[in-house]
Image (cartoon, rainbow, N blue to C red; front, side):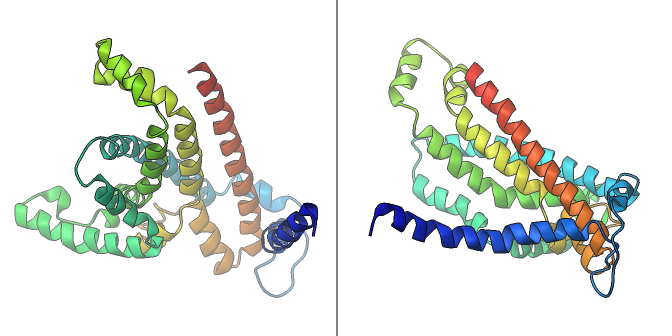
Length: 286
């Protein structure tokens, strides 16, 4: 059998599966976005009315604001912590292989499981400690306050997600020749100056990967919110994914939320492309 036939046998089934389980649902969702479907029963086509309505819907706009705020803050947090821990785990410390495994463990856990664990911590453990120590700010659950609930979600998601960033940054650090650091040390370069002039520029491609992947993943956050707050209190932590799920499947807004999901998809793609262009241009400058 020729190589061409082997490649076709390996590729065609995957393309067909991708088309059936990804492309077809996407196209079907777009068709439903042009209707007033409730998810059941009859429906009729209403054109672009759902799309125009999205831009004046307060609940939709607030969910977009929360999602973007959460995604930006969490992306910054996980990348800063990821770089710092990667530098520590790449240095000559004892048991660094053990610590690498420990730091990666949260990433293999399910988002719902991690959310329920932190829900218990924020709801029962921390308030108990706060009351025992007389700390007012810890005496009640931050998840029950509309102004602080999002911080609990950031902490939970960052704790679980930072492992992936650490792994990528460690991979990048191991590609940097040690001779460069030895030369910088002989020239009297400080650790801070070495990081900004050598380490970070050479880590730029890995920084780009982490930034794009992190932003995309956090824009689609769902599991942790479901198990931590369910979108509350007072819908203050309702992400776009959560809003589409709640109102689309159980709120009789299937067609309307299908339109929301189409806009959501376009925004994620646009942000990812923009990040890649800007960061790649930055890499060239470095």
